[in-house]
Length: 175
Length: 135
Image (cartoon, rainbow over all chains, first blue to last red):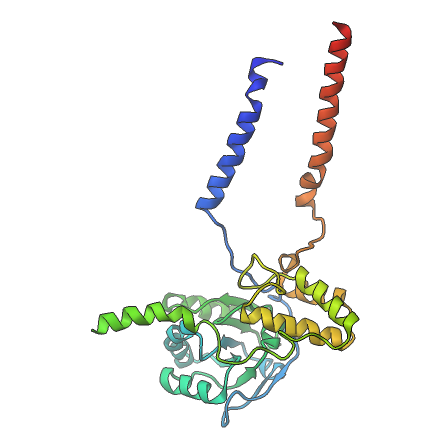
């Protein structure tokens, strides 16, 4: 065996260790995206999340105009931070509907009273069934849906102030 | 005082990560039909939890994992094939959601590695034997 070849296992070990250290330093993207972007929204019909607010079904989302579908919950802390941003989007003329995950009517009402209500319709998803059907994996998440009911963009996590333009651009693209 | 309250609130936030609702009906309850329960359990061990990521939905205490167990059990109870439920989930979350992903081209070297190493070992041994015979 040649001398250089003798160090081959050591070199292999160094490469493996290097790869491990690199992966530890750059853990990569752990966001799970829905594969339904570009596909029609799955059919669903949810009951109203609280009295006095219309219920939400998939038919309500294909209205000929792009809409924003927000997945939220009264028990979700980042949703509180997102609320003023949704309010701003509403003031800019965005049509927003929502799905409340695992929520009681009284809790939703309190959340809306405290943090504002930008929603036209809110459906109650008691066992996350529609959330799973949408390929969503948490709260908050938002979907841009075009006039024909096709999902055009999924936003994972709260929409931050500096992402308002991004959302407006995605809504415009969905025109 | 306000700052303290804010800090305490931040610390308390993780406790609010789950809803106050009870688990879904089939989340922690076995199906009455033994065979259906076995089929559902087999699938639940093969489906990855969305928020814990290192655990299957059968192993996880996360709320959404409970909802996924509920989804799987109620669909199995309704007569749906586990394979159909799996592909329904893969359609939404990608192969990532399954612990038994199909062999994709990117994984082929990994599958080939044991055979290549075995072949390399055989070549090495043959060379060594040949050398020993020669000496």
